[in-house]
Length: 343
Ligand code: ASP
Image 1: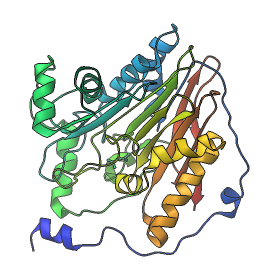
Image 2: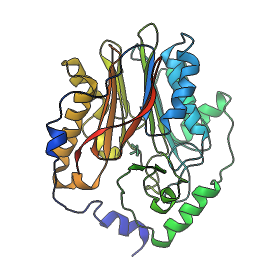
Image 3: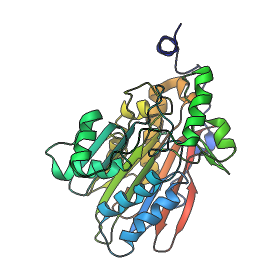
Image 4: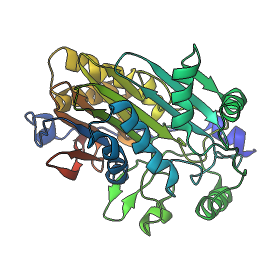
């Protein structure tokens, strides 16, 4: 049986029972709480550097929209398993990138299945600002990028990605791995690499509030490593990987994109905040919804949400241990370990 058919016929997830952690399910709202403006938060340990990029704008009274673009561009330029042109390819050996951006006025732009462009987030912003559309994909997105002056980069894998792809080809297994962070960083689908610290983050989702109190967000990824060609996750989808409502708050997601899409993850988090929940509790409720939908299969996937409200409060929550997020404000710069619902 060829690899493709094997993948299509194989179950993505095995069936193992759910263990809900009493401690975390009963956890009260909410440490650590960070308040104030400007403020920026972003996913995983890569968020520390990304937040610095955002702070170049926020720290000078700049606009949150400029900050969230500049912030995630830092990650797009770094070598990693899962963001930017150096990331793991799809199962046919091509790096395909997804990104979206949203401002404080419901303006949004997105690109998906974009190849050979170094900064998909900036193309997403151009889609938002220069077209009447929200989303461009594939060759059309690339054509638009080139017309806008973006350079078409060579179609080649980074040495790390080439190595990971060659290793992956030996078995061609299509099996999601729960992405967790350890002391050496983290990354899904390449355990041997993250063991030696080469692969240290995946999707970068970022939300920020500027000194005027306006919110914006960005999200960029190469998605699931060795994915089926043409597969999109949640990251470029407004409402799934990212959502901003300037009256309420902003949220972003990381992890198994399919399970974020099916419950409109980031929009759901923002709606919980609209109902009065803190960012952390809003993320927790959304995670509990993912777990409820997935049933026992939730044991085998990671999903995490990260949110910021109009008061400048932040919070995150994950299904499993190992999700962290980076926070930067005038008086704090740190990586926070998120709470989780399952051991
Ligand atoms: N959410 C991304 C996707 O499904 C991957 C991730 O954040 O780990 O494409």
